[in-house]
Image (cartoon, rainbow, N blue to C red; front, side):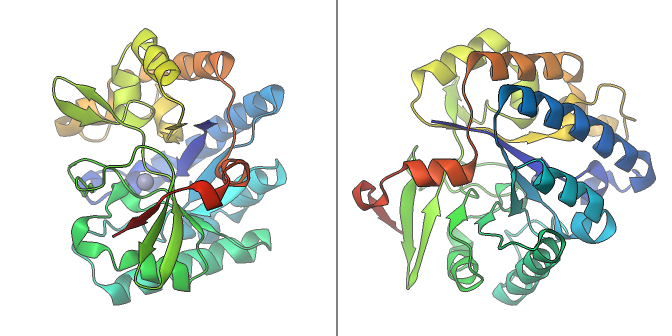
Length: 275
Ligand SMILES: [Zn+2]
């Protein structure tokens, strides 16, 4: 099972890119989105797009376009605030605002969520109760290792499970990781996808029955303006070849979206994971 997902956001939402200006980025969001939607049509693949509420309000045509092309619209928070130091009130309101904004644009229920920067941790498990309360059924927020802005290193599953936390039950699709030199990394998206050779990514995917990807449009945007040289490796390394790598991936593997994956799984036979 290979699940194709994208996060629809741009650099200007990050606090550490204060030097950026959103006017530099949004026209590019449109360009790369169209390229990707066309190639997904050719391949007849459906993907899940985790979108920010703020994008739904400022650029509803982007969300409508993705929805009209047959892909799943999911929630990636409202303003991309990292959650490791936020309280339940903030999380409830941010998630509700995002879901309301997205649903208003597409006229359908939003039932899937991914936290900004995978910022769910052992300290904010209460997020699952709030997601459940807000009608979220599928979650992709758990990164089962330590990482800069979160990570859930005590989570030991590498395949979909049913998370139980108090009364909440959520279908969890944890991020796919692999070990390099003793460090667990997400090879199927973001910076490491740009950094690692395609042959390594392909071999690792072939070895795993379950792989979930996470791409951003900026991962493919070689001529984007560089706004922060301090984070050059994380942000810009490997941009030039990344779109070709992505096309190779689409040629070498079959992809489905989260909704299709969820329908394929017999959840009665899936183990429960009590947080
Ligand atoms: Zn994000």
